[in-house]
Length: 246
Image (cartoon, rainbow, N blue to C red; front, side, top):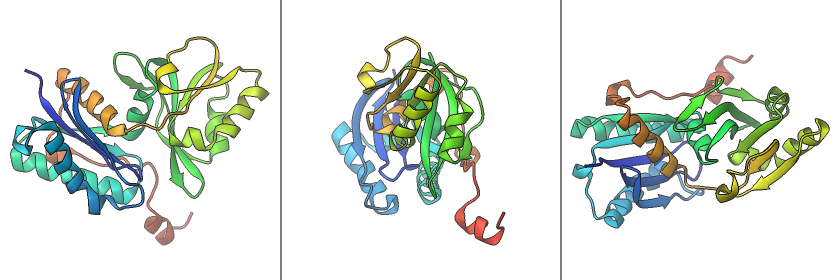
């Protein structure tokens, strides 16, 4: 019998909740980017349980984005998942945000995941997506131009995530300068093969992809306990930067 999985995504402004059974989604809800996760997350979780005709006691695995992303959002999401998992004595999984973003673009040998990091900068990482998601380098916090330059030697790439959509013009101009073909596709068309840079333009509910990766981790017995779940911040918080200016 496949496990019931509760997955939440609070690294982005919108966020989302997903309840799945193995690889089958039973209920999913996108958040409201105008509202704080602290105000909506529990009610969104309750709504998903109603839609899935399930209860919190039915959950066998809890999953959440572990970062990078919004400092406040990550803390809210991880604290919620840790509390639920510890109370029910269930395992959990922390899914790096950029892995979930790369997963939305389907199969690829080289996918660049981009997420806005504030102050005009981005979180960026190169990953491959086959049966699972593999990190090909470390997540970085960079100005967009430097992030794109970092992968300028790759003639075939997928670019995905809200940061890629925001900086589409910059990505396209860099591709043209290098003589690479550039195209834009939705998620359902992103498995197109061939050389060049492909930007995946669709906005998706990342919670569904957190759920998919959590299911893969469950099958591989790569689970965590609540006390070991930690956030991946990549960069210092604004408060830390103010106290310790570079």
